[in-house]
Image 1 (cartoon, rainbow, N blue to C red):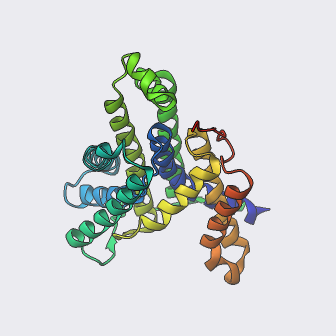
Image 2 (image 1 turned 60 degrees about the vertical axis):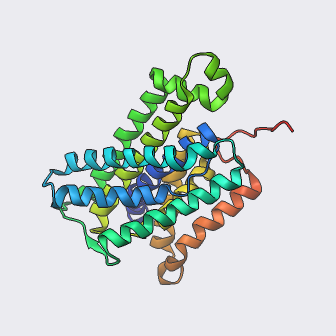
Length: 295
């Protein structure tokens, strides 16, 4: 039982990262029906921005976290305005190919600027391990989980209690009706990209601190897993993205903890197998809704 509880803690810590990134996927898809496959690279960009803020600008951790979120939000706005906005009336295939192209562009530009080698993320926190009757949790896990919960509650407040949130929900339901009601659709979509990018950047900084390293390709696997989490929870559903992220994290932790040396290397494959099963059994995800499109 103690081993099980320890794996739960590990899974929740990892799932917090996936949930933050999955929120960006699900917000963008919910409002413009676009799967932004460049989102994993925003996560990577945020990790590098946080590292530079600490090492070059000498900012304390939480200011570095905010700096990375702001810079990444601006990058998300630029990507949306330059790459995605001109394609809103184009086919979904064109937008999808553009997203993949932006992903490779960000990876290669980062590799050119920061180098191909792994960079060390500065350790600004002393890792303390707390033992509660055999249940072990370290200070970084508490930090990751705490920051994630705060950001999730803040996002829920914005979406459910603010004028911006009402505009986002309105555009997600019907863009044309939103325009008639005085909603600035373009600005709402841009802000949605900015918020999603900021959340991904926060996840990147936290994982950089946890793994003590960052590299230009670090966003590929977490980005895909976060996409799986968004689909599992019901892409377009914010609570679904949260549930999906934590579920994927717990699944990985259980496979790594109980699978031993034989199954541990295949924990990624288990996640993608889950995606296939979900798409076969319930394509809309746990909290997603089946929507019939008129032809």
